[in-house]
Length: 193
View 1: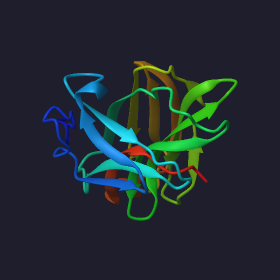
View 2 (view 1 turned 90 degrees about the vertical axis):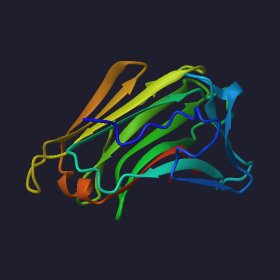
View 3 (view 1 turned 120 degrees about the horizontal axis):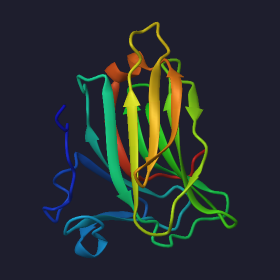
């Protein structure tokens, strides 16, 4: 299946994304100094307040597929996070909840790690373990497969870090959520509650 969209920032602007959210004191910019792959990259700068967030998103409604995957490159760039805090890095939004949510965690003892939530039609969720990432360029991939039908619980959500499958969430009843998808968002979201 062909890509629904491919955001590379190679136009040296944000025209490839559907919309940008940056609040309060936060920015989303394209810069050659932020390149991880290609000539340009996206820089997310987060303001110094508790509810700061900055992200880009694309509408994916409806995707017309039983499978969704996305990949992005992440460099925490020594970003200072309060010990024990978590932030959302990506969301696959639906009209009522999420299909998937990827998080970045930081502890002084262990450093940075990522983990994935897979959601079900009843809005319950299941999460992977936390997997360490380095303070450099990391490749993060999420693959979500739709359940066979509305009465099946055989959907999956897979988390890859730097090309290695870290964990598969199985038994997801996510059939209806695929019809309700609205956006794929990548960026920096306020503290996870």
